[in-house]
Amino acid sequence: MNATRVVVAAPGPDEHGVVRYARRAAGDAGARFVPAPAGEAAPEAIAAAAPPGEVDVLHVHYSDQLFGRRCEQGPAVAGRLVERFDRPTVVTFHDVPGGSGDERDARRAAAYRIVAALADDVLVASEGERDHLRAAGVHHDVGVVPMSWEPLPLGGVAPRLAAVPVVGVLGFIFPSKGHLDVVEAVSRLDVPVEVWAIGRASDDHDELLDQLVDTAAWRGVPLRVTGFVGDNDLAALLRAVDVPVAAQRHGSASASLLTWIGAERRPVTRASSFALEVARRAPGALALYDPTHRWALTRALADALADPPSTVLTDRPDTLSPSRVGALLADRYARLTRLTA
Image (cartoon, rainbow, N blue to C red; front, side, top):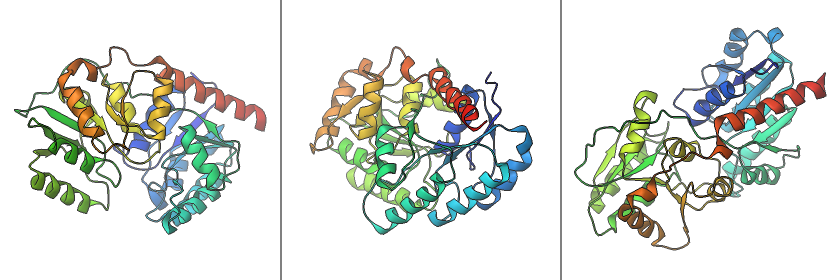
């Protein structure tokens, strides 16, 4: 157990990928995770549950989705939390603005700069996100601590509910997550295949669910949307699909990609900057396809359907194991307390 008393805060629902990851990473590093509602109520709820006088380090996992309904609200909420604790503070940034150049991206980048200025140590989960932070004007010495795979229970398979092979996409139905790309690619296959969207529509994006359902119907692709899946059922469901897919277009670190690996699956994966980084850290864990080639995803799905063993991992990579990543975090906490003593 880590001797440094650390409180980890990622306010929001347990089903959110950042919250889910922060909770288990805290346990792996010997820290205490404090649940709290997202948004304005978070600072007071966290401070009430974890008296600041009993804390050595505050670790905030920051995504603007968790700290306010608009990105401009996040810095004030995070600032109140840091002020409440008045302790050395680590901030791990998620969903880092990607430098698209549009107006919303600029507003998000400004918010992330303000939050970074509150921190004594700034972390991200990938080298690509570090580059994005620098492009956004964050000038800290940003550290990279990779996401670990989710230690899902092994063994057991959920009952099959489809008479044809299943391609599965994990995570919120969200812009750029890749659900539509998968439906389009499946429609070009020579054999009937069902698509499972494992998750629910992200908040404020119900129209994407409608679009996905309509597109699948128009293309003649059977579609099953599971809604939220609890921990007790997730592992078996992920092992029940024939081909796991991670087709998200964004380059941010993806908890869902690591969840596939935790379920001992080798997902067909869009070769984003983050996926390429995971592949370097864990060779052989992903089946990468080149998104610049129009038919690449369809070919990758066809290859995986023809070779079922290629979708299974015999061993989860130790380089991204929870114990390895937990030790990296514990070292950061201990170092921070030494530097600020």
